[in-house]
Image (cartoon, rainbow, N blue to C red; front, side, top):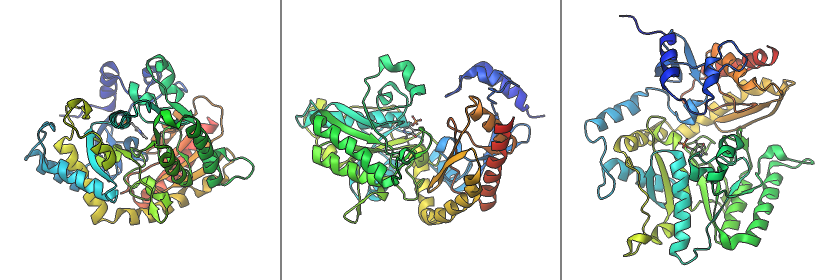
Length: 453
Ligand SMILES: *Cc1c(COP(=O)(O)O)cnc(C)c1O
């Protein structure tokens, strides 16, 4: 029996599957400059994905930033197989189980105990909405119902459900739905590419925090929370900023009684060098802590849909009362799914047993070395890196650049999917030195293919 080929699966997928983040017509336009290939994947192993025609692709962006330790990781697989034979799922209202308890305990410990309770959902956008609702409801419970507005940063991305779009500032995802959305106030981003007159990244951070201070001075009474992506604004095109912004934002939020929500959905789990990105902002010798933190993507190793909102005890305690209405009633059917929690525990085990944060320091140096030659490229600017995320901007006005680059990279065995004109790497942590070299070579080759064709 012969396996179906790529072509068989392509036709069936286009006929039956509505793919995310995609103009479906681009899949059909074979041969045109705007064509977006659709790649049927048969299996994955380590950093590699394999299609049905025997071609392979090095997963340079961790399958949308989710995969930390490779596809079909033997240790995560073994943990999931054991869990499957024990308990696949049980409703979390009125019931609890070992994986959800252990995961909650371990995540709290990773925040030094600052965030004592974990609330569960299935995707990042839901985690954002949960954090916004918790903050809003907290202020209601403590008799400050006028604190009902939210702040976010220019270019922020916190998910695409109608509630999460309120704090997402990416036009292509938001504009069409503006009439449905109760938009938050957008404040200047500390993105260090915005430096003027020789400003350092810390100067840009201080300038952005001055705008935050000004807004809170005038409107702090009405603000429930500020939500940020710590250190790297992913969907904005890997906009990076100095930890000084987080340090100052924490101080300002304390001064004006505003919650700080850290959305670590993309940057958590070691992506930026520390386990949580916010830990790089230090006040009086201690890492700052948010009041609420969202996790998803990497936390399950890239295996299963899982998101978590960690909350401070102050917030948690304000919901304790005889009244049901003062409780946080938000619920999802798959809240605290046992398999997903077990995948997360196996992921945390690997961080511990392999000393991953230390090993990644060497890997991030290798990534820097592989990309260094691109700094000389006449059409490349802002080559930048924070831990295991590296990015560069390509100066071209070709509207098809990102799809041309994507196709060229695929033909060089690399999955690298630019965001607009920003090309970035965010590989799984098991990527080898040789594979890092391959990604660097693929970027250079794909760049010249995309710019000169
Ligand atoms: C991906 C992402 C989200 C949304 O997560 P989904 O699971 O895609 O809904 C939210 N915030 C950030 C920072 C993200 O990168």
